[in-house]
Length: 92
Image (cartoon, rainbow, N blue to C red):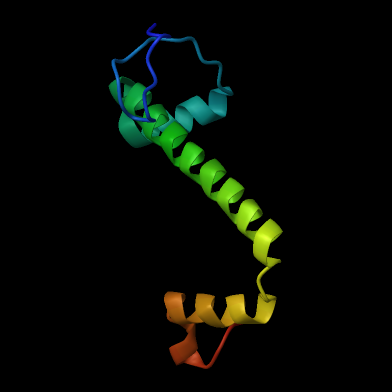
């Protein structure tokens, strides 16, 4: 494993590790990608989780500086982004 370099998620050489998963989780992954696609699937999942964690940190930092977003304004913008605005608003 290469420890002396600073790689971004998804970059650098591959390195093998041992991962323990619940049997049902592993079965579901194999059903989606086959036995030989598990590593690539887990790599993509880990990258998505890192992106989400980084986004959560960014939002928390923004909230510290500017305060939390108005929930009603967020709901309106979410409805516009998801197309619910054209259906008469947000479902309760």
